[in-house]
Length: 96
Image 1 (cartoon, rainbow, N blue to C red):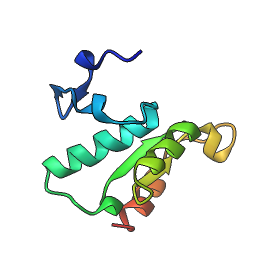
Image 2 (image 1 turned 120 degrees about the vertical axis):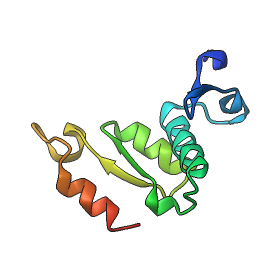
Image 3 (image 1 turned 30 degrees about the vertical axis):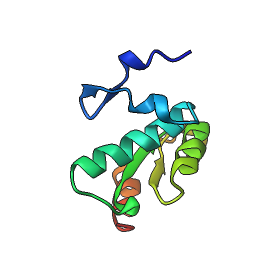
Image 4 (image 1 turned 90 degrees about the vertical axis):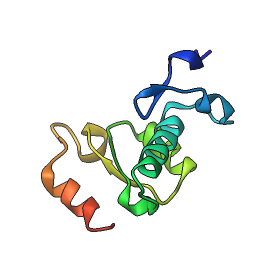
């Protein structure tokens, strides 16, 4: 069970996570990304970039919002030795 008193959102303890029906880590990451963007005045999901190396987390973040701009950044994305690189991030930025 997740202890929601320990979860941080936009730099502060938050209980907003407890209201979500899906508690998978990737879903929570998608939620956190959207809330952070909202606090910064960003409303276009394509301008919200999440870098993650776990395909299950990526899938769950896309379940939260299929329009999130997610850069797969680990070996599950490009084979052994693959690492996040500036070209992948730049490419994501062009989608905004």
